[in-house]
Length: 329
Image 1 (tube, rainbow, N blue to C red):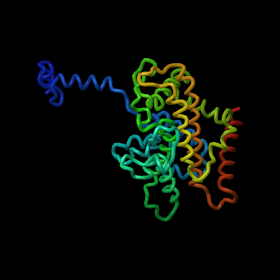
Image 2: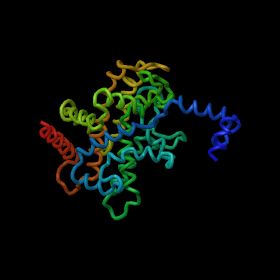
Image 3: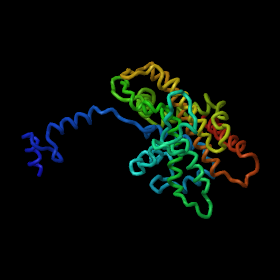
Image 4: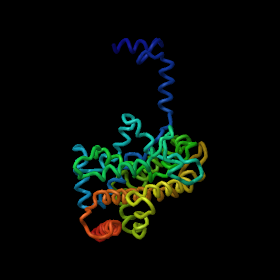
């Protein structure tokens, strides 16, 4: 069989899977030159979000998360934080839950923007965060009716997604997916720059390709540079559990102010873009991690405890941050 395949390639009649060689060569060329179409933070981004969140889990949350995680996760939420990307072709209905398309006016409105291509309401990343939060609130009940392990993995992933500015980008360019650019010398698209390229470049240039070092640097900024902002990160008007509307509004504003700013089709993005946007990206990863922890702490909150829920949770997270700061000195 191997000899027949080799002979057919040499004679130009039929190649692999019966394709004419000329078509096979065209196919291979397209595969090599194709620009990646991105759908979410890369695995590194999601890993960092969940790893940061784990630092701020209450004891009750840590126990609940460990019970809900699949056995192969080894009790580590970060290790399966990209699961929702891995199943989106099997769960095709979940694809629109990773993002929000906005009409290009640099703001987000749930009633206008949270729907899928068929116009079905609540089918966006904010709707998904609220939905899976509600499902997880049945944890510990007599009968949930939901697969709470999947609910946890979806929620953890989507909280990361909504903090990537271009996941609340413009519909006309699919959140930057159709804007072809060069990241230094590499051809890519704007969405992929924010999902993957900036993180890869930061790891190579500043962290010796060590993801844990990048996490530690972001963690240090949480406990020092951004410590005074934590209260604002965790509070919002309206929805008391997730604040996901607030996260989406922040993202579209950052998309307009930073991601899309000074970018045109076939732009070459180099040091000026990288150095001015990396702090934004790292802060969004930090916010996603802290906020994911807060959401899960609210979900698994001990209702028998006395005091105001929001005050207790905020105090809990701040105490953990302060404890981490002291131990790091």
